[in-house]
Amino acid sequence: MPWIFDDTRPVYLQIIWEIRQRILAGIYKPGEKLPSVRDLAVEAAVNPNTMQRALSEMEKEGLIHSERTSGRFVTDDMSLIKRLQRTAAEEIISETLSRLEKTGLAKEEILKLIAEKLGE
Image 1 (spheres, rainbow, N blue to C red):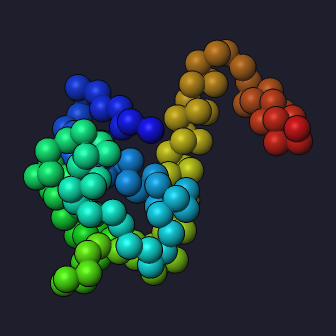
Image 2 (spheres, one colour):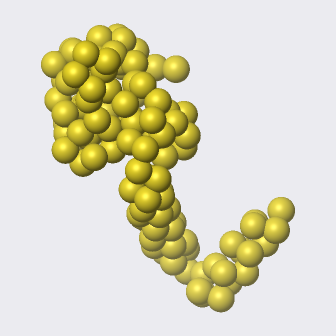
């Protein structure tokens, strides 16, 4: 599936977001080796230098790490992954609640709708 980038943010930040989402969703599993910079760059249709920059930033964050001649790997730190999953979920919930409140629904109605959807 091709990666889709927009012009509102730097491409390397969008790459970081995409790879982070893949890690949080379990597509790239803890401890798993990531595809090479070149392979990821080809998949994303970006310059390898842009991909390298994104991966270097992710290393600073601790979500991935390099092993000298073996490549890059997803962290084994499940507490970091869980913390990032929770942060991502909180951001989605906040954005969704903000949008729902703009519909004019009362908080009680919003909670009822959410409960109904969760029950489905």
